[in-house]
Length: 273
Length: 273
Image: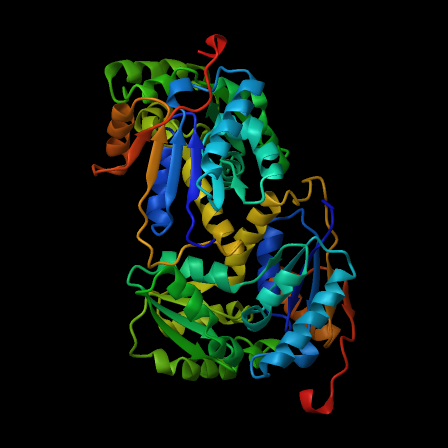
């Protein structure tokens, strides 16, 4: 059991921001990652479709006999975590609770902005998680549907992406908050542009990075951590373009030869495309 | 289930350093605490006796239908955590893993000193936990059998206690280390004196305080956290003197009226006294 991989899934490449932290904090853990770029973004999709896709990705990972699953996608966590966690007999971790816990800690004014996809923001899961910890917290949710497409097409740091970030965040312009949750694992790839726009007095919370502390603790709790003698060979799968995945992985995780393969997951019906 | 208490046990008053952090970080959680001051210190006792005592304290807490048990004692964690965790169907948390994780993070030189009771140091559990995370770490274990009696008799900050701390730490005098684990929940009560003796370049790790992050995360993971509307009334039990427990609790947690009761746990045979 001990030397098995941890499975990660995301709607696309966003979960690589979680993977980066795992490589840093848990270097002996083997990663099997599946990104569903062919069907990204998940944000605007109906709830039952995101749930169905989440199960397909979970089943893909279970074939590798993983010891833990990390839902490295806020949209999928919002609508699928509880049912997947309930049905599997391995630990399943989402990104919303860790992000909320960190934001409550970071905000001294109890005013927290949350950026997310349409799906995540409509689910209200961040608001629920934040208020469960502190009923007096002010939550400012903001859907940013244009962010995931920028990241998936590897267009961060272009003049166009800077403009989109500035415009998307305008609704927060006159609002008061001292912490902001990057409530989508794609958003840390736009971190600099978001920080510049909201100003340096706001603490940005990377929900994915925070999740790795939970992963580490649960590996300890369930006695599943790999021995430090392990030098893991990670495996990456994408339903989209391997070349695009590789470019983004190189930019985000550092240039190196990676094992990245294309897979087909599920069959897209016409209306899902 | 949700509004049940968390049970804590310790050989005496040391676990109050964990309780302090719980009150701070998890103010809505109800605490039921049992300190076995009549039989403290546990450090010099044989392993099977500490295991038997740990089970007696666990059974005492289970009568209150607690939702989680925190072994707020390093000696008991070292020899009893795995068997108690295995047998109960509620989460059981010890203090050694969280302390080790924090120390690995804090030490940039990978040289870590560990202070503990005779029992904790002889168990080798800290060394095992540290090396499981990083096989290249240098561990400097040091048993400090005189510390618990100072704390249990409420003699911290006396000239005598300062002298004992200085003398006990002499074996570390010429050693190199940049992090030091307070590997006994009693030791944070001597924190200032220990810090003065080892110098301010060494990061002290409070194993008990670190444990509260694990408690918080596991409450989330198992969906056991209290609602924030709860204003808990804690209950404290001691096998020793209520007056002495109250003095130490007032000094450590702040002056207030507390529900502290004397209980008898087990029967001391002559050779255990």
